[in-house]
Image (tube, rainbow, N blue to C red; front, side, top):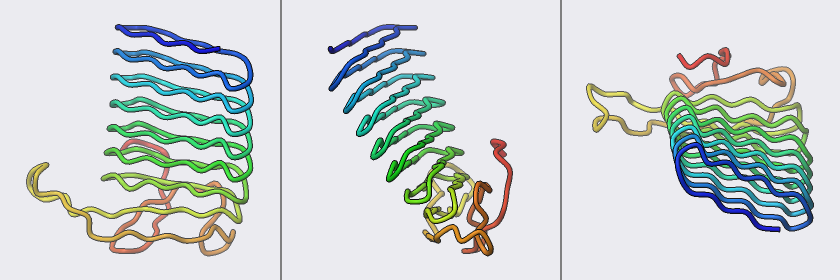
Length: 178
């Protein structure tokens, strides 16, 4: 089953093996369920959720969130404050927008957040990847300073704790959009 929508406040939902869904437009939402189901959204506030092994989700747009549930079900977002979360073995999460958060909840995944003011958290045994940026006086002056990764060991890097990168070091933080 396939589904596609276009337009403001458009919604899309699919159910079944290999089901796909795509939306485009402001506040467009998409949800899929089934083995290998994929979902993609584009637009301000567009959200995407998938459920099922190998079910991938991608969003583009400010505050466009993405979530997956299932083994090897990956999630990616691009846009300011666009958050990404996964649950399932080897289900990786990646974000690349200002203030975006990335989270994984299993022991063999990667949470990657490389945008300005980004944060990441992961379960014990997983990895976090963060970037640190020089903010500068204007948006154009910003540039990356460092990228760092670490495995969540439960001691130096705590499980299910949000981190940001400051002066090249991981620093505990909360989930606010500071």
